[in-house]
Image (cartoon, rainbow, N blue to C red; front, side, top):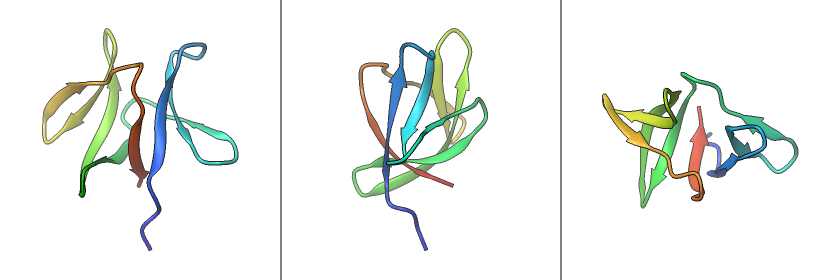
Length: 75
């Protein structure tokens, strides 16, 4: 059974991306995989950090915007 989408947001205090699970925050780590919800598509990706946080989708690096929230599904 597929998990429902959850909100991923940036926490300035922790300098990390977090997933709102409803109970306790789930902090994402480098190399962790999830699916980014884009419209009706779920794109498999992983989160990474260099000079800033970004995701890799099909070998393409995409920057994450810290003031935005994203819908994701954890693997």
